[in-house]
Length: 401
Image (cartoon, rainbow, N blue to C red; front, side, top):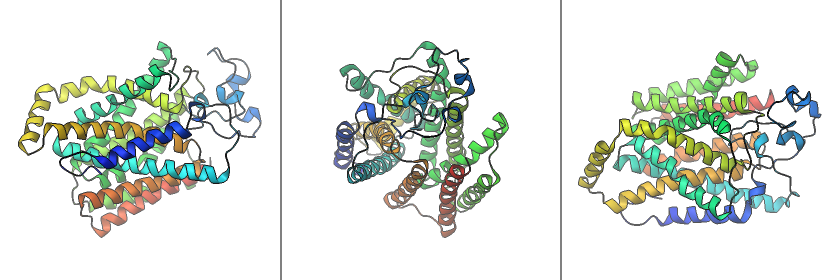
């Protein structure tokens, strides 16, 4: 996709254009986040504080409760969130829906894989992970501001108090992103994704330690393959480095913490208007950028960035090529998340778990092929066990919820 050292990046441009056109054609704003209505009694779906009228946020019921749906989390990756409910539309024909989902998942996998490869190319040429991660978070600014200013997407309306509530989630999103970027730069993409697959372990640990929220025994049992697989993959990883391991694991920990924070702290709160999943991701990206920028400047200031840029030019890279790589990486990071929202908003939790696992496998295999990463049989077995364990955890948690 973007492995040529010089020249344009036609395949990535086509992917990005296709994703934007498809999003505009098949996913109008009022469809984002819509989910089928649930049929359980209202009392089983609404927090007691909302039923007895004691809520102090100015609304008797959440948007989800008013539509007869289950209050979800405020995590933009959770299409059942109360903040993202929209009036349901008549269900499309089965064939049309299947085709649309097929195209969306193909775009999601392609764009996500292209981002991972493009990001690795950026870090190979310009090894400044904090700068690269900050740039990628910034890149969404002009994109969403264009949509908001032209009316192509409704502008979110949030108060200063809501921004304060969302700030920790934005910081954790930035931590998740920069941890992954650092790990990509210091190790193999495949190994970083194995580490990212440990998120369920950290989610279960954080929930138990800080919120006394315990899972059924079969769900805890599903964590064993994840731990065993990562141990095996790390033992036989030929490009292993402790910094890559720590950064990749840190990315998984902050991702788990963000999801738990959304469920435990933000769930049920009225955060504002027009907070669709895409708009929530935009808001969190802006907050994350503001949080990470000072750290990036402190660790990789203009002097270091200029020296790294000069070293890249001395190694044979050109300024236009480096700018194309950075633009490609930044755009792909933002647009693959947009496509992911559209795809995951229309599937059940089990399908979500399966497709996310398949996506991780696709990225691992593609990165091995593109970068000709050498992997030992035991390392491959460990990676497979870890990814399969993550899927098993998701299925077990869904069954025993």
